[in-house]
Structure formats: structure tokens, C-alpha cells
Image (cartoon, rainbow, N blue to C red):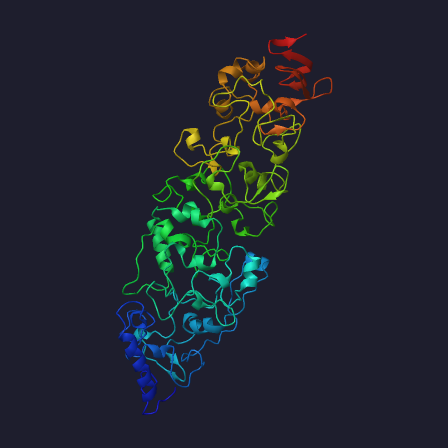
Amino acid sequence: MKTFPSNRLVSGGLRPLRKAVVLALAGMLAALPAHAASVINSVHNLTASGPGTIKSAGGKDACVFCHTSHHATIATPLWNHSLSTVSNYVVYASARMMSLSITIPQPNGSSRLCLSCHDGTVALGSLGGYTVTNMQNGVTTMPAGNINNLGTDLSADHPISFVYDSALASRDAAIIDPAHLSTKLVRTDSQSRLQCTACHDPHNDQYGSFLVMDNTGSALCLVCHNPGSWGTSAHAVSSAVVPAALASAISAKVTSRVVSSKKVVANTVATLGCASCHVSHKAGTKQHLLMNAVLEQNCLDCHNGGTTASKNVAADFQKVSIHPITLNSEAHSSVEDPVNPSERHVVCADCHNPHAAKKAAAVAPNVGGPLTGVTGVAAAGGVIKPALREYEVCFRCHADSVARGPATVSRQYIQTNTRLQFATGNQSFHPVESAGKNVSGVPSLIAPWTTASVTYCTDCHNSDQSPAAGGSGPNGPHGSIYRPILERNLVLTDNEAESGAAYALCYKCHSRTSLLGNQSFSFHRQHVVNDQTACTTCHDSHGVANGAHLINFNTTYVTPSSNGRMEYLSTGTYSGVCSLTCHGKDHAAVRYNRFGKLP
């Protein structure tokens, strides 16, 4: 154990002259106005009079815990605290950083000075060659579990010590050229490295967390980050108050809370800004620096039907038919192949860009506000960002993806690529990309639908509790009690009694009275009511490349006719020829028109 000469102050390990200089510095700080800008009134004052819970048993020398006027460990900034000997910090890493050819180094520069206390490995009172042993309550190092103890695993913390320069900004449109930052309060070190001091001023805690500036509305974050259309997004302008549980979790992530006059702001989505979802330290989702470890929970904390977002999206994900956002969600990366990622998954961010989403309405087929700024696949097959049409967002996973899954119904013509199913060159298709081909032969359409109408994918694939379904839930294909994420019921199997409920999805747009009145096909009623044949046994609702009127037989129930063919041939409006066997009945080139069977 080190012994101290009689001319040194044992409690602080200081020579009288050194102590006098430090006391003079402390006296000047004390003479400043009594507000949080002074180190004296911040938790960095580790003397007995400091406002924090971690402090020494005595002494009045606030500066000495970091600085000395003589025999400094490091000349600049006259450093007095013992440095950490850790040489293998686990540093931040992400696929996006790799895509930009950025490797985060071991902490260096001023960040090493901060970590001499904040990595929890060095005694807080280890000052130069002298050790303060009399910290209160038996504290030596930063206590384990304390939010200020970052530990040696920095993989869930904002990256530090990397070179942030114009060359990096030229490779990444999402960050701002440091040569043109909006304020000089945020700055890199002399070697253009981004250190802890870019965001934190250890001598000034007037904004809380020792931030260099007020971060209301993420003003500090936006000095360096340029998240696209954030300024006009629904999140950036929302006056909704975040849930109490989320506000509490955010508060728990704040590294400094004991300040005499820290600015207090309302916990609205707009005022919290990035902090509504992201944290700079000890993030749950590491590579995205999100609050929660479970990726989708970062969205569902607010979108759960509470006061922040009244529509309960979370409830839809508990239904029998859902987009499986919990499956392989950790595989998601902002720089992944948008069509065929290394591991198939779906997360909220695949369809919604939280930095760009708006509340604006749109007209089919254009994307609505909630889908603003996401990646899609165009009708021709190329990746497009941002997607301009709603179907382009759906095509990202349900078109050319090699893992798009099997068809719901066994078909004569097998096609699971929705981009090809809806192609306007097909003989028939539901009008998703453009108006359909039957300009005069659809008498069953219910107003306001006409043969010139264009539909959204979500006119069929939607929540069963959506406003369009007569409910008060959210719009969108998050989940439904009807498979496959259908807004209304649609029986997919034969031998079920016809009713308005059984084929509610079809009857949403097509008049049940018209269809069962045989206005477009003389045997509709016979097939659906008498023979209990499902609509989908004959019709493929997306589209058929080589079949008119969406005819693509369900091979579970339909087999070839005695003439060896299984086909439907259109011979004009309301007339055609069928060759097939169905329900034990052989139709060998049976001809019909709107009035019935022809000889």
C-alpha cells in the first residue's frame, strides 16, 4: 500500500501547491452562476459536496479527479486520472458499417480518457500516482449495473474513434459532411476522429447527459445524421405523448440525471425525436441502436392502441394469419439484398420507413403515406427506391423472391410470382397495376367500382378489423383472422354452403345478387349454391397469363374431361367452352352463353 509523505494531503494525494492550483480552478468554477453548466453542480463533481450519489468522503477539489496542473499523465488535457489497461474492448459493428468499409478501431484519443472511469475497471479515485481510497459507501470503481458504467463491451453503444471526414460522407448520403455541420459545438478531434466529446462536454451538464447542445427534437443527432425525409415525417411532427413505460425506459438510459436546472421537455414523439426509438448507449438491438432487443417491439411499444397510436397494430400480430415479424427478425439489415436476403424474414421496416412515413392518403395504385420511402420491386422486375406504387412494396417479397412460399390453392397453371400474375400482358388479371381488360362485361361490380378502377393489394389483404372491414383497427396486412391475411372471409374449399359470410371478400366488390342471378355466367348459381363449388375452384384472383376471366382451376377438385383436356376457352362476352370433370360430372367441350348451355 502506498504511503504518503507528510506534506501531501492523504485524502486527495496532493502536494500543497498542486492542491492550491486546483482549489483556485474550483474557486473560479464556483464563482460562475449556480447552474448545471458548472462542473461543481454536475455528477462529475466527485467531491463530498457533489450532487451525485457516487462521491468521495471529503475534499473540495472537483477538478482533481480528471486534471492536474503538474506531472500530468497526458499533457493535453493535463490528465490526472489513471487510464484503463483494457486493450480488447468489444466495439460496435454493423452490416451498414461494413458496406461503407468502416472498421471501428479500439477506443483512442479523448474517448480513452472517458473510459478510464466509464468502463468500470479503474478505481474512481485513482489519480496519477496517488490513490483516493475513501469514496463513500465502499465504492471503488463505477458500480456494476450503473447506467454510467459502459463496461468493456461497447457493441451496443454509438461507435467512437473512427475517422469521420468528407470522404466518409461522400460514401454515405445518410450522414452530413463534417466540413458543413450546422454548429461548431459538435466537432471531431485533431485527427478527424469522432470521439465521446463530439456529443458530450464533460464540464457542462446544462442539457443533461453532458450533451454539447439541447437535443430536443433530436437537434444534436441531426447535426451529423441526415435520415432522408425525417423533418416532414409523421414521427418528427407528432405531438402524441409516448407511453409511460417507454418514457421510463428512455429515462433509465439517460446517463446523467442529477442536474440542478436541466431543461425539461414533454415526452412527445416529436420532442424525443430519435430517442423515441434509438439510444446512444446500451442499446437493445445493437446494430440499429434501438431501445428494445426484440426488434419489432421498438414499434409496438407505441403502436399498441394506446394514447400514442390509437390503432392497435400489436393486436393484429396475434391473429392466426400474420406477417411473421418475429421470425428471423435478427437477420434484417439495412444493406441486405431487398429481394433475396441471406435469410428470409419480414420486419416492420421492410414495409415502413420510420424516418419518412407520413399520414398522407393516396389513390390506387400510388403508395400511401405509411409506405413512403421504402424499397420495392417495379412491375418490370427491377428494384426501386423509393417505391412509388403500393404493389411494388408487396412485390419485394411476393414476386421474384426465391423463398416466397407455395400457392394457397393448387392450380392448373402454377404461378406464385405476384408480379407475373398481375402483369398487364396476361389474358386476365385483377386491376392492381392498371385497369382490367373487361371494359363492358362485369355487371356485378358494386359502386364506386367500375371497369376503369384500379385496386390496392390491401383492398383484399388487410386487417379483419380495419375501417374498410367496418372495424376500428388499423389498415394494412399486419394480421387477420382470415387466411391469407384477408380482410373478409373467403372459403377456399368446396362442399361449403354458400352465404354472404362464406364469400364475403368476393361480395365486397361483386354483387351477390348479380352473381347468383347469373348475369355474367349462366351457371354461377348452379355451381356455387347447388353444387357448393368455391369461387376459387374456378377463379385465380390475382391473374392468369393464359386464361380469360381469371379461370385457373383448383386441381384438388377439377380434373381433365373425357376428351383429355382441362381447359376453359372464352368465345366472347358471357360465352365459352369448358372441358373438365368436376364433382363427378364430365364436361366434354360444353358450350354455353349467358342464357344457358348450348347444343
